[in-house]
Length: 406
Image 1 (spheres, rainbow, N blue to C red):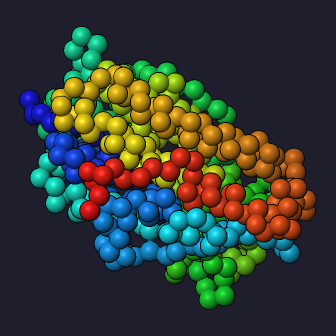
Image 2 (cartoon, rainbow, N blue to C red):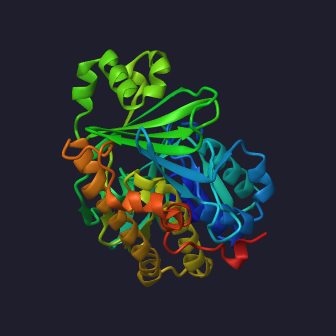
Image 3 (cartoon, one colour):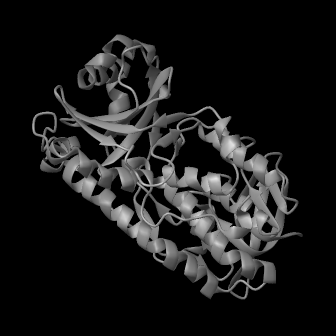
């Protein structure tokens, strides 16, 4: 049986950042990623101000500068033909007064390259965790299967589940979970961007339709929000009905909806909002989406997952070096990160209940009646610091531990 001190399952932002930090602490760490590369469309591509500060602390500023990216300093929320609510990030505290839009595969490749310089870091691509190994109620490692069909086991002092909202490890252990209803699912797609189009990130809220556009330079990445469970109904209505709906809600996209050649280009995100009641068991810790699936509202899921990883590395590095990680150590991670998760999910629930849900159900038409909070933001721009801070920095941002700084 293979052996490592810490086995991290999932090569997303949480898993890769945790692997890098623990390796810099001298902990033998193995990260498993089931795919052969990080190249996946429509993953979250935001790198928030607090994560950018983390990269500075890790000595990765110059490497990040070489990664293709755009800096977003203003978040726009058009709610009608003549009304746009703008959140200005330029007044944020700290060195980064923006959010960076970065293809997630480039971000993960950068983290992987930095981690590869550490002799105690091991990345296993094309390797999928299939279950847990336990002994006397304690998780002692994982079973895996490679893309070639090879199977095996890895023993570990600690296993960390970073395998997302459909976590195999979370399900295998049967950890208790609390879920909330969400009013929407999301179609991700892209359309060309033309000169003179809006820049940055913005949203349009109308009767039974909502859309967020993200300026990616030559194209827009679109999040078209649909009522929860309505994916089959939209697809049955057909391609032209979707094109017409998109052109109606965003008239300035009407001249390019024909570039959408098939509804197969619309990738469904099954939106969930949940969190584990307990993020850990003896020998196992869940972080990121494996511990708390976030709504796409605010685009804060990646930032929260990265902050989880930083806190976990700071709290667990020394116990892992000693070979003596206890459930009390794992509980410290949840105590540290739990409040930020609860507050963030609470804010998302408020948006679901008071804006997204009513708009998608047709109970209010936000293009005709702008809610009071949005009117106040327009009248008093300085209030934009509040949502700007929550999106770009978040609750309880984490700093790199001393052992990981370069």
